[in-house]
Image 1 (cartoon, one colour):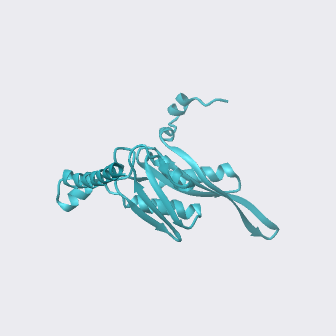
Image 2 (cartoon, one colour; image 1 turned 135 degrees about the vertical axis):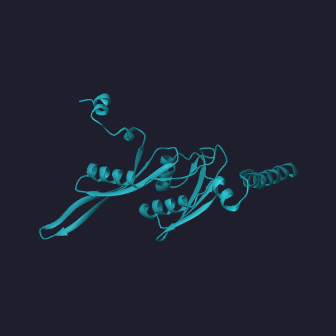
Image 3 (spheres, rainbow, N blue to C red; image 1 turned 90 degrees about the vertical axis):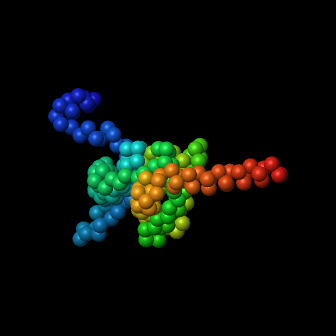
Length: 196
C-alpha cells in the first residue's frame, strides 16, 4: 500500500526525514553465546547527512537487519555535526584525524577532482555534500575506526571567518594568502610545462 505524504503531515509526521539521506556503510553478523547455544544478531553502521554540511554516524544492533539499520539511523540523526565547506564543494583546509589504530588525512581539492576516498570515508563525504576531496586512510581498515577518524578530522575544520575573528584580522587577509599560495603553485607548474 502506497504511503500518503499529505496524511503523514496531517498526523504530525517527521518532515525532517525527507531532508536527510542515509547510507549503510557496514553490516556485521554478531553472536551472543547463551546456555542453549549461540544467538545471532546484526550490527549496522550508518552515515546520515543533508548533503549541505551536516553529517552524523550511528551504530545499531538487533536480531534482524532492518531493525539494526533503523536503530543506527536514529543514533546518527541524534549525533549530527556541522562542517564548514568552501564554495559548498570542498574542505577549507587539510586536516588529520585518528581513532584507535585508524588514521586519516583529508585534503581540499580543486573543482573537478571528485571524491577520492575509500569506502567508509566516501560514504561520509557523499552524505556531507563534499564534491571535491582527496582522502587517505593510514592504519586500521576497520570501518568503525575509519568513520570515527574521519569525523575527528572534520571536527577541526574551521572557516576563514572564525579564524579571522580569533586572530583579529580581516577575512580577506587570510583568504588572499591561501589564494596566493595556490597561485604560486600553479605558476610553478606552468613554468615547468613551458620549459619541458
